[in-house]
Image 1 (spheres, one colour):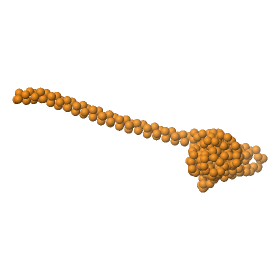
Image 2 (cartoon, one colour; image 1 turned 180 degrees about the vertical axis):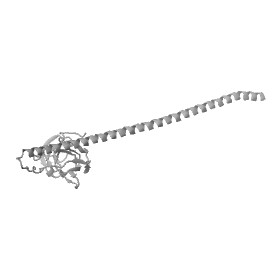
Image 3 (cartoon, helix red, strand yellow; image 1 turned 180 degrees about the horizontal axis):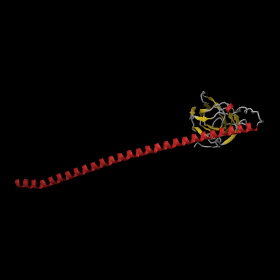
Amino acid sequence: MKTKRLLAILLFCPLLAFAVGETTGLQSWFDTTDAWITSTSTSLTGAVARLAAAESTVAAQAATTAALQATVTTQAATAAALQVTVGALAARVAVLEAAPPGTIPPPPPPAVGTGLTGQYYNDPGTGSFFTKLVLTRNDPAINFSWVNGSPDPLVTPDNFSVRWTGVLLAPSTGNYVFRTDSDDGVRLWVNNVQVINNWTRHAPTADFSAPVALVAGMQYSIGMEYYEGPGGATCILSWTPPGGVQAVIPKEVLFPSMPAAAPGAFVLGTPPRPGATPP
């Protein structure tokens, strides 16, 4: 019996030693793997942080580029306004030089507007594609609340679009804020620059432009597009002039074309072309 026990002990000891050795090896492998996972996680965290920093840098550069583009646009508008002023002054000088000696001809009478040219389209589907021109007329102002009705018997109550074009005469120098109230889509250009764009189907909504610098007595192209889907229909164009209060833009400063009583002046830019899309 003792001999059997001794033989069992002698056989068990090497197995125990082998098991202990294997356990130690496995622990070492686990430790190594854990260290690798920790190192990899740290590297990934660093990579994510660097990616976020790169994205932030790209966003900042994009914002800087947009700001520079806005500055260039503003400077171009200012240069164009100065060019108009120079043209008007040159025309006035020519009139004075042509007058008999010792006389000063009176200034031209102020121009009085009659409104904008409105083109109305029946537009089956969404109403936003200016499909079939059915009516052209002069609208003294853009101040319409058709509710569920129609602008004219020729125009369908729903799914129609309108394009107004013409010239805006600035009554004073300074910054103007334009406002549209619409149901549904609307977009507005002043001096061939889009200042409002909400070309979506929506409930009655007010949209505002950034301040637009205009020079007294100068004429600027103006264009507005509107579409109506199903339901109510509203379209109103207002402004807040320098030092003034918000009001619908009156017909007296709106012209379907260039006022004749404005020698030497010309339209800055052109109205939006048919089907023009936002930049």
